Amino acid sequence: MAADGGTTGPTPGRRPLVASTTHATVQASVGRLDDQVPFLARLEHQQRVALLELGRPMTYGPRSTLVHQEEPSTHVVIILSGWTKVTRSAANGYEALLALRGPGDIVGEASAVSGQPRSATVTALGEVAAVTIERDGFLTHLSAFPATALQLLGLTADRTRASDRQRVEQGALGVRERLAILLLDLARTHGEQDPEGVRLTTGLSQHELAGSVGASREAVARLLKDLRERGIVRTSRRGLVIVRPDQLRRIGHGT
Image 1: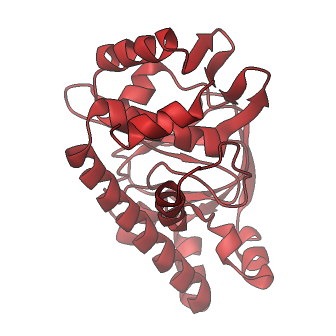
Image 2: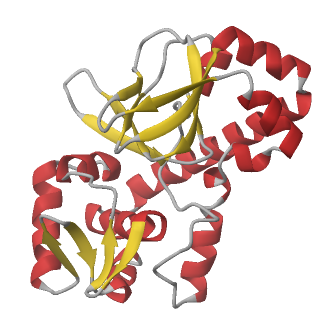
């Protein structure tokens, strides 16, 4: 799904904290990077300045919403600091976590360009500083700066490819393998060193983890319990710590 904001995955430029030990895993990780290059990082300095000058600085508090699913597009948001989650809700209430977007990323761009209602909701995980640009001004800017428009097209293509890959993984891998891969991805993008291992800093709930791997919260809770009992992860009020990333990699490879 090419939703506003894209799909989850590792982000270059944000130092990986869990290193791969096999060539296959390294290759798989490299293949996941293109869609995660932040939009601003794709632009030349003059392009970035011209774009940001169109916007209005905004600050969003934790759990506040930047854009709402199904609403008409009125603006795009460029994140300067902080992190957001991109989710899509089904009619039965099921919510899927599609992506985590942070500094340099753009959200709301798909509906701004297409003129269709927003395909996802974007919510701040913590305090977020951003620049909002009105849709008409954004589209006019893309017409005046074709190099920026080309970079946006490249970003859209990368996110679509990542979404296709995610759908293949959903069909080819079991929930256990998908959860292991997700935890490793989060460790690379949202992990910090901890005396016990790598602590995830996203603050995602079991419900949100379940939405990312296409499973029920109960199934994810059972899998996390198994990982805890095996000493692979530890959980507490401070969050989840990956203690044995090597074991998660083995699970992700189906071994």
